[in-house]
Every structure is written in C-alpha cells, then in structure tokens.
Amino acid sequence: MPIPPCKALVFDVFGTVVDWRTCVMNEARDLAGRQGSRVAWGEFADAWRRQGYLAPIGEIVAGRRPYCDVEQLLDATLEELLVLHGIALDRSEVERLARVWRRLEPWPEVPEGLERLRRDYVIAPLSNGSFALLTEMAKRADLRWDCVISTELFETYKPDPRTYLGAARLLDVAPSELMLVAAHTADLRAAAGCGLRTAYVPRPLEWGPDAPAPDEPDPLFDVVAADFGALVRQLTPAATRGRT
Amino acid sequence: MPIPPCKALVFDVFGTVVDWRTCVMNEARDLAGRQGSRVAWGEFADAWRRQGYLAPIGEIVAGRRPYCDVEQLLDATLEELLVLHGIALDRSEVERLARVWRRLEPWPEVPEGLERLRRDYVIAPLSNGSFALLTEMAKRADLRWDCVISTELFETYKPDPRTYLGAARLLDVAPSELMLVAAHTADLRAAAGCGLRTAYVPRPLEWGPDAPAPDEPDPLFDVVAADFGALVRQLTPAATRGRT
Image (cartoon, rainbow over all chains, first blue to last red; front, side, top):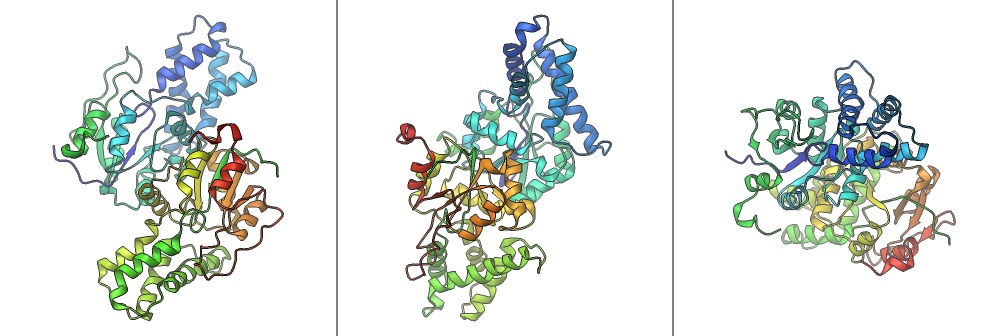
C-alpha cells in the first residue's frame, strides 16, 4: 500500500487515542461503588457514552437539535444515570465524575507513536471533545500535540463535513494533504468524502472485551493499522524510524 | 505585589515571545541582499510590520475594513516593499520570504521560562498570527504550548474584546482566571478591560537598538517583569522554581 504524501495528521480521540471505557468505569466505580455495588460499571460507562454523547451529537449533526456544548450533554446524562442507579453523590463528587472525560488515558502504545509521528507531521486531535477538555487531557496525559483542534471551533460535530474541511483550513493544508486517523469507519468515510486521506486503527477493546468485533476496513481507506506502532511503520521512513 | 490566582496564561507572540525584527531582517538580507545592498534591512522589517500588519489590523478592529487573513495582509505589503526597494526576487524566493513570520525565533530566555510556567499553568499563545503560522512557529522553535489560540478563531484581531473573552471561553476559565502576558501596553489595557489579569514584559529591543524606550508600566497591570525569568519568579512558588 503506497504511503500518501500528507503534511498533517489529525486524530479522533475517544476510542482511537484514549481508552475512555476503562477510565470512566474505574473512576465511577471508585467514586460511587460504595453506594451501588450491583451496578455493572462497564455498562454504566457504555450508557453514558451512548446516551450522553453519541445520540445527542447524532441529532445535532442531523439538524434535529441545536448545537450544545459536549460537556453539558454529558453532564445531563450523568445526572439521569445516577438517579436510575440510585446513586446519591454530593455536588463535588458529581462534578468530579462529570469531568472524568478530561482525565482519560491513552492506549499503551500511543505516546511513543505520537512522539515519532510528530517528527514528520503536524499532529493534532480532531475530536468532538471540547477545546478545554482536549487541552486538559493532553496536559495530564503528557500527549504533545502541535495544536488542539476541537469541533467546538466549528460549532458542530463530526461527521459534519465542516469539521474536516475546517481542520484543513486552520492548518493551511489542502484536504488531500491531511489524514484522519480514527477507530471508527463512519468518521473515516465522512473525512474521505471531504478529500482527506484516512488511516483506520480498529480498537477491538473500545467497548470492552465482550463487544462485537470492529467493522471490517473499507477498501477506500488509505492505511489500516493494528495500533499506533503499526501506523508509524506505515507512515514514516524506515531509515529514521528507530530514532525516538 | 501579590500574585493573582490564575489558571491559565496567554501570551502575545510578536515582540513578546519572538524577536521578529532580527529574524525578518536577517532572512530578508540573506535572501535579497545581493540585489539591494543599500537597503537598511532593519527599517525594511519595521516597515513590513507597520504597513503590512499593525496598520491594516488597526483598520479591521476599528471596523473600517473587512476581516482579512493576516498572511494575506503581510504578503501584499511585501510585494509593495520589494518594488519600492527595486528588489527582484523570483516567485519561490518571494514565497519563502513571505513565510519568514512562521520561522521567527524566541528571545533567549523564553523556552526555559515557558517550560517552567507550563508546570503550574495552562499556557497558550493569543496572537494575531494565524493558527497555522503559530502552529508551525511553535513546532520549529520547539515551544511547547498546551494549545494554540489565534485571533483567527474569532475572525477579528486584538485588541478586539472578543479575542480576550473568546480565549477565556475556549479554555473554560473565567476572565479573572486568565492572564495576558504581553510587551505592549495597549494589548494589556484591552485585556484588563475584559477582566483579565495582566503581566507586562517590556522588550526594549523589539524595534531595534535605536528605538524609543518602551512605555512605562500602567499601575493597573498586575505584574511587571523584565523578562520571562523574572516572570517565573513572580508567578511560581519559590520552593519548586529550581526544578526545571
């Protein structure tokens, strides 16, 4: 597979860069576990992401709901889930748990992979997480982006085409000089539809060990890689790869 | 002077973080010097900044001219200055010189100062330079911002209040939790007018060794520091200052 000549790489974050499920599950269990011993915390995390993030964002991109800050969406669903599970936290505990999305940690091979890719490309997140969320997450997790791009800057969410084209415009590159790295085929297809290059990094553990397997790669994707180490091997010259 | 309790620091860039005059002067002289031996390159740099940047941006903020990308403004003035001085460069040379603003280098004490401040604060540029310009400059100069904030994100320029308030909103902090660090008193007064904290770092050499002295500090500024080393001493706890 030939390597497409790109100048910049933008990365989906939740699922692609960070393991949101394990982090959310662990923090929720540690904080609320004493009151909800029968709660399945993995399913709690899944429900929070589905109902507080994927569903409302889908409605917003489809034009059926006005734009709203992603953390407000997540906050509202957290309140509902806590009531549903009969978990009574005090205000500061709720606020702490609500911000767990700023404290997510990367998959193990990500920091080294990003550090290597940063030598050859401009690298940035392109995420539906808010600008402040992505900034705080990167600082805590010591991920060195060249800049932070949130779909908040375009007042919409992926997969709205304005997000991919907006990222290219901000980075002053043509869409064909920009590659999206993502674990989600719908995100990649939408980016390809805007003329971006695409790298698919499936994450079989994103939804936990019992989840269905990730989608098969679409033949239109430029690169398919099992993790960021494999991505480095496909996107960087062999001669310089060892020097990290 | 008590240290105001801030969460984030945003930095003016041209003049405050980088020594634009020396860099522009040297690159212009190296590239075009063979054709314009009588050109005073420091004055060439000054004229480029005044006519291609300060003047049109002032017009835009005053509402007398529509918003326009800063690099387009600089490009147009460069063409005029080259004609004025009878310097004939080929297209690739003009393009290279036009992008010198992406290759500016920091004042000597800046990298160490930023690295130290980054341990206690979220740090970002807040500059009239474009998003791509600031991103490329930081990557080349190895300046590690937590994120990049360009006034391009607000489709206006400093000192428009929307830029200072927009930065606070993106970082999810109150204006009073944000401090602007700048070498220019007008920039700082406008930020203070929006409720931001202010740190004045005068740069007597910004316009060269023969320029008039910088403005006196305004009593409303929270911090006045001779350079980023002095800024670190005022904004970070003494106990941890040595650990860089």
